[in-house]
Amino acid sequence: MCSGAFEAKKLPAAAGEEGPLKLSVYDMPVLECAKHHRAPVHRDFMLWLIQEVRARETQIAAGKAQGMLFKKHLCGECGKDLASKAERRQAFGFDLGYEETAPFRLEIEMPIYKCTGCAKEQIRCVTDLRNHVPAAMVGINDAAGFPHSG
Image 1 (cartoon, rainbow, N blue to C red):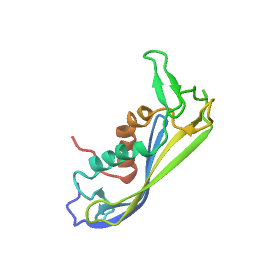
Image 2: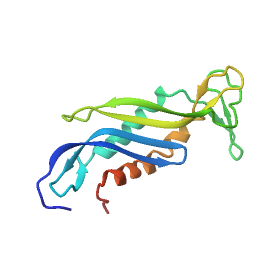
Image 3: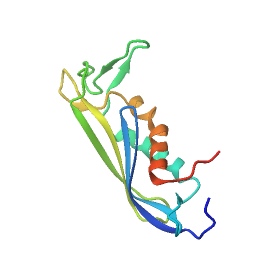
Image 4: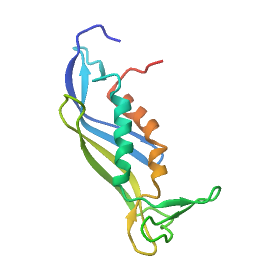
């Protein structure tokens, strides 16, 4: 890591994708040196960001997975089957703030499926989102230019 002095900056955009999930952050607070090396604003920042994503999954309409080997996805409202193909992709935006830093924006983008019964649009299930968050966060780290540890 660079031995130069770091100052607080905003990263205009960084994104990571894994499976059906795309995570994007806009104006994320970072530390940057004169040589443009970057690091998270705090050593726990990325873990905090993962927790923030998971805290917001309840705000996204989602169906339910049924079955062990052959998954079937049912509407979270009426229990009917979800369409087998996604209608489109949709981004769900959230404004966040970490401790003393300036606010920034998080977007969670997932495929949207329509219920065959009530026509409610939703992601297939929360597990589709939850299982891919850590790997998508690695993509954000890479896009931000953060060093890898370990």
